[in-house]
Image (cartoon, rainbow over all chains, first blue to last red; front, top):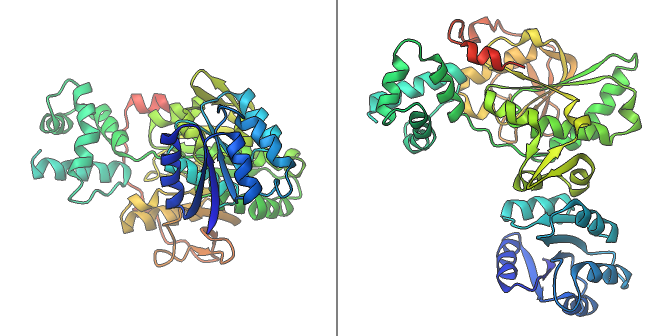
Length: 121
Length: 296
């Protein structure tokens, strides 16, 4: 079973994402911010990361840059999932190493399509 | 709505669009046609049926047909047909048309335009391999409403997220408020036309690739066979037909054969096409100036 780390400071979003991704047969790990997420990756590098942008302590962008410098940090497919819906943010995320980008609000079909696009399912 | 009214609507839709409605689809008819009735200042569906039966109701019949046809579409739907298009079909056609002949592609039920625009973007992404070739994409649909949307090329955030890789969104779309508009260079690659697949389409010419996906599923057996046989007349001998994931030619007609290594893709069989004139529905005289005016 593949693992997905869901990083979002909103417990509601984490719950919704968990429900969708468990339906796609992922094992879920949760983190509330970039720092927690980085710690989780140091313990066990997941196959996929669903990543919010705006979070306390370390935001999604800084987390992604730090992740890609970790040993094995180039392996997880990273899908941003954020309310930052303008082209500038998307381009910045791609430049930092994101594989896909979901603009909130989202639904199961969108998550499924994006995970398919990056070869996770 | 009485069973008689429902049967009248079923017959009307079948004649005009080939759409087959099963006996238990009352809810679908009500949910889609009540707004049409209200727009026409009619109290409900019985009054709508009465109006449709009266002379001079062609424009209303077109509205009813358009409201009932399913127009769900998204970019790179099902992904695999587009992989086949990019990786196998286009390279084969480029090699076969080495003399520089134009390569023609037809999206036979393009709905709101995501399919032809996906093909246009796929072609752009092929870069040098295709840049010097003349490629024409013709996209048709029965509904003038969806063609208007297709032509505008403006999509909601939800629509651009279904199947469209984010790199292509950034490369080929511009944000317009809450919406996303496809780039003029991609829009310019597609010619939209209004066309009913039940009517003759040989005037469109011969195509190297025909995408006719997720349309046949709404037709009855006889209509499917008729459309497939007439498609065989417009697909080049070394051309390709792409059908939807739930569609096939097998058991329907010998004019196309599956390509085993390309799921969902069919090639013309070297066989005589059955006489298809009987399969064309005669709608002469029922099309209104409103529809003709919407042709592009």
